[in-house]
Length: 93
Image: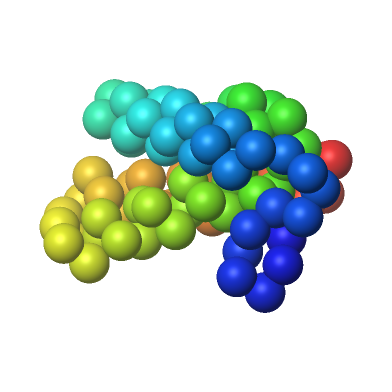
């Protein structure tokens, strides 16, 4: 990713956006259900990103923007899941 957070590997920008949106939607689905463990959930999200930090980072930024508009517990849970997915992914990608 460059300084603006855009992929520099030749991927179409809309592919990153599409995958980030899918990841964000899944995180929101998971956050809306009773979680038995954040670790397994974060692993699922990291796996879904397929090792693509640009996708996870874009989804996390989207969640952070939502947090500004709606600082409720569900939005906070989505942000936490995305942050943990980045942490889990960093060590296993």
